[in-house]
Length: 604
Image (cartoon, rainbow, N blue to C red):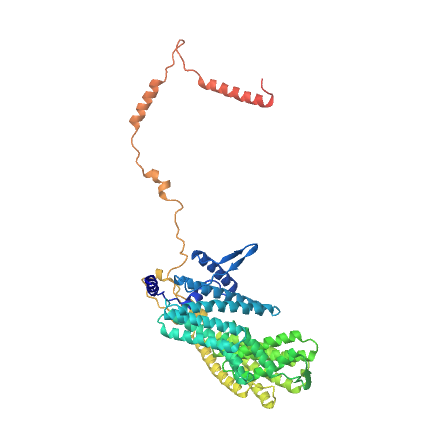
């Protein structure tokens, strides 16, 4: 009894583990090992290698149950509450689930790139179920243990709810996915409010933003009336929120809704005064998609939303044109839809460019050129010659946008200080506006003209009048010499570096330098060359500046010693010095002749 009591008291006195921020651990691993660039394969390899290292380091390896006359059976060692001695053991559950989740995302990407590989969907769902199994085990251990604090338990609960929601989302179990994602979002919002750490708060809020589009998609699928226009608008907003890297199921749902909303047995189209029935499913879907796009465009509030709609519809129409080749007329109609969509997209880009603070007339000029060329091609398509209203309407459209193009061309010349050309083009713009207004009045009842209005032309006329006055004033000022051109202003700017003019007062035109993106030079780099002598004076002329010591006494003494050692010449009986030079010359000749004899005639 006493031993049992002692063991219970020891278990009760175990210290509490420090807080484990599960989401921070996951996000750090993802950002550092592949998911910053969407590389799930690299992240899966990292998780597998980390698990292997941790199992060896902590001696928590899997085992093999050896049986007689049978191959060894693999037995996985699961994490339990008794095995946790420190917080590092929680990484087993976290990275096991992350590894399975990465495998599922790899299968999902493969399935999106190759829709014919339908078996990848089953492997993806199986991997997600295994991830849910590991994270549920982790949540159970953390919730039942008293050694983990409240923030750790909440983070484990939110992470497990998110993983269950993702598994149900990919399994198309919308009700269960909605419940799990709502729970995860609620917990993360509470954690973001409770913490004082800005890094953790931004992580929690970022996870809530990630959950929101998927949660809205689940709510949309649970709704009873998926064909309503308001629901379609919510879907379009959802796709805009998810961006280019969003879930592909949103685009599939939008196309399915459009197909179900227009699921007629046949579609009749009218073009060039003639009616035709479309039987091809793809062409039928594209034609009805443009009708639905017109409804959605009326609900768009910004040019960017209209640009996104036009890009999607134009891409679908391009695919339809590639598939339809049986009847030329249907193909021409699809081409008309594509060209109209492209021109409308350019007009949306023009509106977006005008709304920006910094815009150049040259940019708008190129866009208007594209719109005019497209409208010219529309009137030349096969079948257009049968509809007089269509030809007249697109002629008016061409003249209408030529007036805008002429105005921005004159603005470009005015910006380049070519005032005479700009004045002539402004007058030409006014004449084009007058012609466009006359043609618009004649075609008020033409249903092809929708965006072109007389009010826009009146606004353009007022802009032309203001621009003409500004150009005339600038021209007079330039003639009087009050205003200098950009080249003249650039010449007057003092470009000497500050290092050379430290003792001088200089006046710097800050406005002109900022406009031309010029900076004040501090020093000239690279520095200018300085003339220098080829060699230093010390090595060439130092000998002329030295005073030599007097050594005449030493020279006389050396001469006397040399004379004393040399023998004197005597008479007949005297000894004379041997003629060593003659003997040496003889020996040298003998040596050379012996060498030559050995080479040519052999040795004796």
